[in-house]
Length: 81
Image (cartoon, rainbow, N blue to C red):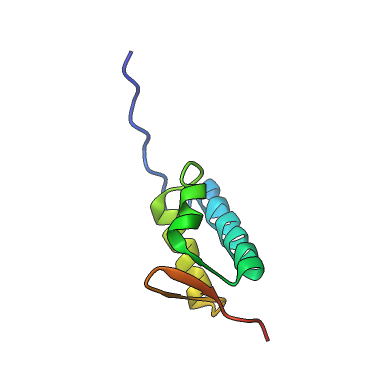
């Protein structure tokens, strides 16, 4: 029996917002530990848990809030303080 394609969730759907928030915290925690890491390495570990768009949103939020920088897809911690 064919399965129905999964419908995309609205941008403000609570489970989507929770996934993005969890990604944000997880990625920031990783950066605190390793200081810099290729974005693709992190996404490879997350891809079964989130969409690429959700991952990119979390990265964009880290950059926008001054927690990280990204150059050539190398994510680098902006040291706190």
